[in-house]
Image 1 (cartoon, rainbow, N blue to C red):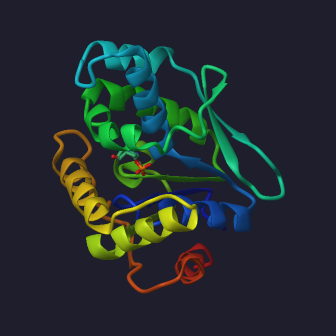
Image 2 (image 1 turned 120 degrees about the vertical axis):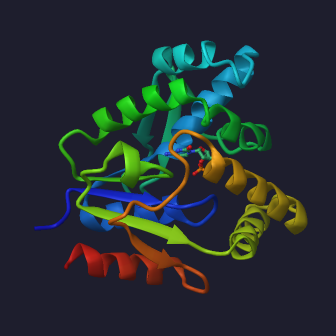
Length: 223
Ligand code: DC
């Protein structure tokens, strides 16, 4: 029996969403990137000018905001993200969202609402879900839990190349500094800090291609 719920956790820029999407495609499952949900909420809070540490308003905003993933093209399997019906795919990865998302995602009330939404989305299974706390908090019952790692330097290098390939300007040392700052906030926050579940399979992706990582996960899927 193949696992019906697969959790993929790990730090920023370790490749969770690309790898999760490839794996979901191979299995014919849906893919949910929970990081994008926190980004979408951050985008809306910024637009409304809400204080990004407001522990009353942000959970309320999380409750009333409709976040949806729509498969753009069944052939290239790209997902678009909608907030209250508005397509914000081009904005969820902006520098402004990137800088602020760690603040929003450490608010306990926000996490409670998001976890509830994520559990509902996981429904009956056939889901690959990526994030920071999927194996530990959101889906502790997942039959397969993967925790991906790579050094901050390797992750910064990958993000740097990705930005250059997309035709953007990029500064490696700025990316590395930001990434380390986000690692620190994500790992040290009080609620659901980034950490592997006790029963997670830890995969060090340093020096591996995306396909090699997917192959390693596939071996666990077939176990
Ligand atoms: O994976 P990402 O970079 O898109 O995640 C964006 C932010 O959201 C990141 O700072 C950590 C946070 N996050 C979280 O706290 N819990 C999750 N399940 C997913 C992401």
